[in-house]
Length: 521
Image 1 (cartoon, one colour):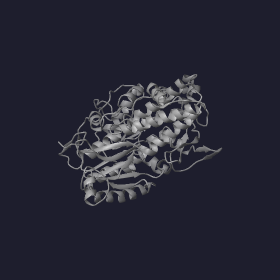
Image 2 (image 1 turned 90 degrees about the vertical axis):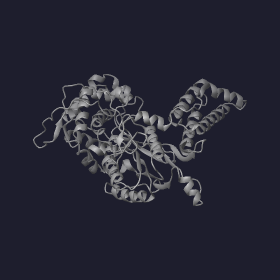
Image 3 (image 1 turned 30 degrees about the vertical axis):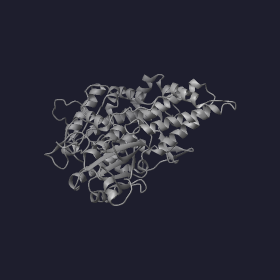
Image 4 (image 1 turned 120 degrees about the vertical axis):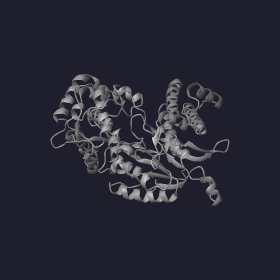
């Protein structure tokens, strides 16, 4: 495990500023919860007889205070193992976990919806808490469902029972207090206060500020299905010595998946779609990939190197091609030790950066290749002044998939009143813009809105053979109900400097310091 220097060892990403201690979990999710405010250190508590260097957190305090205490201990004592955590799964924490769940989420094998469980909630949570503390809690199999992917294939998901979701959410909150102090800045997926746009901001800032000439676009094959449960438990035991927490996680891993009336149990994988799977995935990749990659960057790289990972999808930038190829070969070997492998079709090394177009032009090649990341296509472009600029454009397959979904739903809503159709379409388009309305993507937004308008026009014309709906009338309907395509997100450098204001030491040169944007000072 890496400690001290390696925790803040980030070429692109500085750790987020501390949040206020004592805030409730619901409030922290809306602010930027990454670390607690530094508090006055206290003497080390005594551990069990066989665990000298372990910590016990106090339990006669509120949930936020207890989590802050755990977070403080995890931050100050990087090698400590927590022996007493289950008592933090209190009725209050279960209640917070319940209200954090999606109200309209699909039910599991129990058939319970959020609203069904809310009736007589206090009694049900007290009973659930009692079963968890006594060890009488039993995990149920997850229900297998499939959702379409942008490439036409089906993505398998595991929908847990409602009580399993509640307990998993509570455990995730508990584990976040520990592992948010361990996770490196290069990791963005499924972490509080971090999201897809933070990852893209870090990537853009890193490419602009560092000497990046090659991009390694990597993807792990069937990651959630191939996770070794044995290795996962061993990774968890680096920090978790409370066997009751470990047994809880093992119950969920061994509960199996129900499909076509048959329960299948495997010693690999963690059900994608369950509440706890993202946390377990991050822990797995933290030990299997992140720590190793950060060490490789510091010890083996001969030039600049940036790393941005979102779940099992990660982008690595290199100054030198030799570094990129050596890293790729050694990464394959590294992942193989932990039962993982790279997807051969989704993993590639391309020439990309501010000098890529010039170099390829001298060799008689075409424009620099592009790569996809988090729903966008990244392109080497130029500003109006002729300077290098990374342009982001909505992936074509993602737009087509969204339009296909809208078309199918509009066919179902064909005979609804126009205001009802307009309200629904407005919500869909607004949600689409909330994600894709980034700088340099204005044209793709306009194209999407045009296609939605055309789909709406075709749907309305199918309602009657005598319909005389003109484009002028359709344009007016679009003006009334559909939001206009405007850029909603700031430039990556502007937001990144605000989100990550701390200064961090440069990995390879401790005497040199870089700001959040990567510029050496």
